Amino acid sequence: MRWILAAAALGGAAVSLAQAPSSGPPGGLLERMSGSWVLEGTIAGKPATHDLVASPVLNGQYVQLHEVSREHNAHGRPAYEAIVYLTWEPTRGEYSCLWLDTTSNAGFSNGVTCRAKPSGDEIRLLFQYPDGTTFHTTFAYNRQADTWRWTLDGEEKGKLVPFARLTMRRR
Image (cartoon, rainbow, N blue to C red; front, side, top):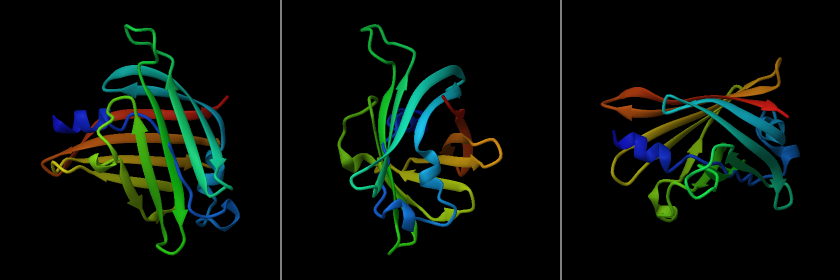
């Protein structure tokens, strides 16, 4: 169950865009993330509700996601907090992601960065850790409902193992 540890290390979100929003990938997915959201669903089989603010930062080149759980730990702090940076790199034709959260401060070499090729209204991130663990995070945009579906899956012996199923709705 190494993927559970890997997922825990990726619990939060911070996003960076390496290109101004007007020249981003087809479909403008990163621009559609901007705003205040409620993230609800299950994480590790337990109900979860998080607040999320997504904002363009650094001259609009990045999107920063700041995710904070409404649940608190024994110390009265949010049980989970993350800052994720997403960006579009036009020279590579792909997204880049940096995911930092309260589950680990093992540094940038612990697999918190990844890339994703565009895929319709989805951003499919694949995190690969130094120990060989792989973790899949997919953001899927529903244009009609203006919502996002997040699926997070570990991988064991080549098979995906569900970790989280969340829906992101505007506040």
